Image 1 (tube, rainbow, N blue to C red):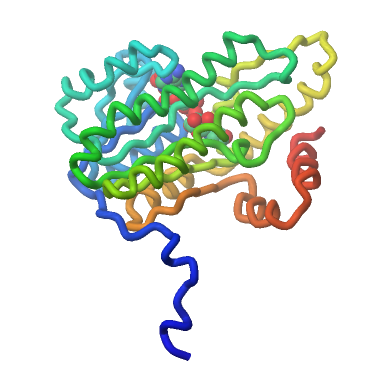
Image 2: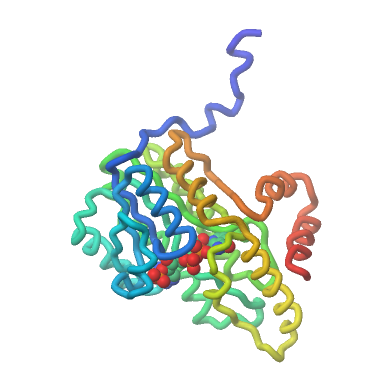
Length: 293
Ligand SMILES: NC(=O)c1ccc[n+]([C@@H]2O[C@H](COP(=O)([O-])OP(=O)(O)OC[C@H]3O[C@@H](n4cnc5c(N)ncnc54)[C@H](OP(=O)(O)O)[C@@H]3O)[C@@H](O)[C@H]2O)c1
């Protein structure tokens, strides 16, 4: 058989090799004072990048104590459009130069049944998890595009691929970010920029203590919601470490052919292939069962 016969029939459809980024380049990680962002900032410092992290309050004792060594913090609150507008100025103040790697990580973990989600809560969630991530990317892109190389990682969630009851708003925000990421991937390829989506499963970051919750404790969903939340929190506590997610994000950053989607935790290696074989209803049932409902 000739080499021509062995050629991958899809190779012309897949991503071509992109210019690489590496030591000395600037990386920006949103939400670098905790969990996945903190671990990713550390991994980037260790790989020789100049790392700028963000925090809502970079001067606070908590932020200072939790900022990885070698990371410069700048203020950013994704819930506040004015704060996003100030980001380019903040980056200039610390002489960040062109950002070659952007990890859109900061996010809110919201919970509540569809019927009981307040308008303001949903609006804030989409501002932080979707519009904020997109607008930060818009601020970074002109210089990254001019440079002709770069990497952008949107941190979504496996719940963006596998919906869970009482987590509709969160899953919807992460599915939205995935769609933005996949679309931008093709838009930015001609400019040497790789775009990937990272979907973590349950990761032990302590995010359970920071979840926002909207449920009527005496309402019709109260019992099932409580069961879901108890199991969600237990899964998180038994989840994999943020360092493992950071390692995957580093793959997306350093690979000349970054994949569209990376996923780790919550048996991601089994869940994604299974979802291509099982009826959708069965898959949704498995996910609900994992959360006790
Ligand atoms: N942990 C999981 O099981 C899991 C699973 C799937 C997906 N994820 C996603 O992974 C990302 C990180 O999660 P994590 O568990 O590492 O969370 P985390 O430990 O709670 O850290 C969140 C980070 O984001 C910052 N932040 C919070 N609200 C912000 C806002 N409004 N504007 C700007 N920054 C804000 C926080 O910094 P300051 O407080 O200093 O501002 C903190 O550094 C999130 O997008 C989350 O949805 C997590």
